[in-house]
Length: 204
Length: 253
Image 1: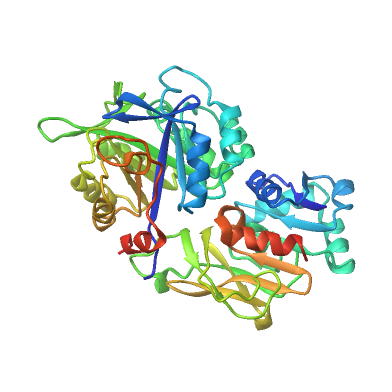
Image 2 (image 1 turned 135 degrees about the vertical axis):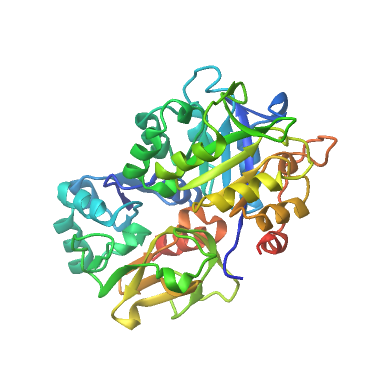
């Protein structure tokens, strides 16, 4: 059963809806004891980095998540802010991140975006896959996803990069390492392109 | 191409029924909004905006049950507007699976709701919506309560207030063009997108793909429309439709 982590940061119902449509059972919970029984985890999230970390701490979820992800190697999919939280920290705030992967999160470089491109990066965009992956499925066809973000991931370990996206410049739009996956875009809002990712994750 | 401009079907409902108006009047019954959303899934639309056009006028709550039902079928970004007055309502809507809320009539009395909501939920999820009417002298005024009530605050001043309060997007609707297939009010789009730094979503009047392109060229970040996506043509025969991906891409400048 897939546990969708409810920590008061963002839209989680749509993730549950998509998994249900694909025929996979999932549950939404912010309780430690319930999430301890999940065989896969999804960390969603919208909003401020510090707010997200504080919410995880205040619900006493961080130690349990660390145990499950780093020791038991349970697959975890971070989405949007949930992906950004996987690294060490973010320019958006002062809180330390979960620190499971060697990455930081930076603001879009306004100088490189130019006049035309607005922040947040909101709308549909393409991905270029950087390495072979079960979750992305190594497909050749053009794939587009829905993005809403003002900050993006910047891996310090270059092998983390799973795919990149161009918005003014190329940035890393998903990362992966062992059982940890983080996507900046919203698969739960990206039609069949997102459904494939959710299905691949559910079948890991 | 650096940026794909969004093309957004707008579904207008009266509580639970899908309807379409002309100049905010004469609602024609279209069908069940859930069927429309299912078709929009298949067509892979960029985003959907659902507006309950009678909620504020009837001083009624959003129809949460229906919204949740519709949301359960929506695998694209989904915005809802209509009858929203408080933070509690906004929180409830997000818990149903909505990404963005559209605030309109409430802004006349409580523009601070934008500020409060965007500081909690992030400005990307708060859309300010204004309905604009042009009089015979060419002067623009804002109307609320589905075009029933005229707002005293002049348009440019109100826009600054909305942007300053922290709205993530401006949904700009032309009352005169609604349902007319005459094309967007391009002058209005030009003026407003020049004045604002937040994205402007243009709505009202699109009758063809060319009109959508013209809206983007005039400065809109995204183009929204209703009639062309629920009717086959100006004769208003019902057909839920959406351009294919190549056409959508061609709309971006």
